[in-house]
Image (cartoon, rainbow, N blue to C red; front, side):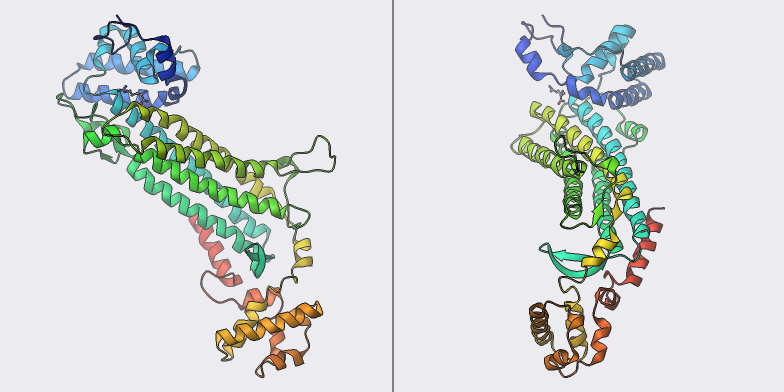
Length: 458
Ligand code: ARG
């Protein structure tokens, strides 16, 4: 008494409430292209092992391809009563090619089918996100040329700390995004394992060839345990985590740039095309795009939390709870992709306000640590040098001047080894040049890194 593909043993039609409550086609239709690909590969394999004739295979493949085209064109009618994208496509196939279509689901279940489609979708998204990350890295590397030689204050605790090259700043973001790309690549390897053929939870008695399907769909390996495969969503959580890490990186960047765009900082000007105005205050140019990059990270974090909670107490194997994974992952991927798309032109188009930065660069004793290390090089123990320079900074603070403005007698009173050459390491330019270590903001080291990045992003 049921029009459902699973309705044989049912004596009542599905209640409308349950039908509406449990449908997923409203969102999992996004998997249609992956579903068609997976089914085409499955049908070819079934023919290769003798379950379908070549004619049956061709009918099924042609039918699936046409359905895929209709969905792409927007002319396909999805039915909520058929629950999900998988049953909609399969039913449409049977309506078009007749009983042959009823053979497609041989040796598989929706459980392994969903997992296969989802992995294919995530794999595509990983590749898109990686491309967008690379694009954003390029924008940051391009900035190193735009802002060549510019020195900005580096901060800890949002208090002025030491001077750094602007290029060093931009490359810091490249490094973070590079680790995100590495995480994506690592995650991709675990996503890219074929579940199809594990069927509902225990495998199948049909003599299928899973390797053939894996090869056709570009999977690197085959999931080895059907129970594991039926219940596994690690791959989705891992992807959601990597997306979260990207969103967090973007959010911190956005926060920093929002600060830099304030009148108080006055370090950065965003292109007008990437600012919005106020409906009441005529002078305003607001960084709404950056604020939304920061704000939208919240939903990506929330999606990850949902997925963790969703899977935390599920017994083996498949449970319908798992249907709740799709929207969370789609939303995280859509959000991060949109943020990355917006970030690249903002990074490329912003203008560093070099004059304004330079005008205030002498505030905050950015060269104090360099001076301390200068004293260490003269043989003074670090703890002692720290204290002596701390006192000198105190003297300069009282006089409301830079360290470079203190008279020589103050330096000599601090330590007898200090002579006029002390002025050679004071001021942000000299302080930046005094850095030596690998990974530091020394101009030569930074130039090497810029070259490395140009090479990496070619
Ligand atoms: N729409 C379901 C999902 O996304 C398909 C799997 C249904 N399997 C089942 N045993 N009811 O998870």
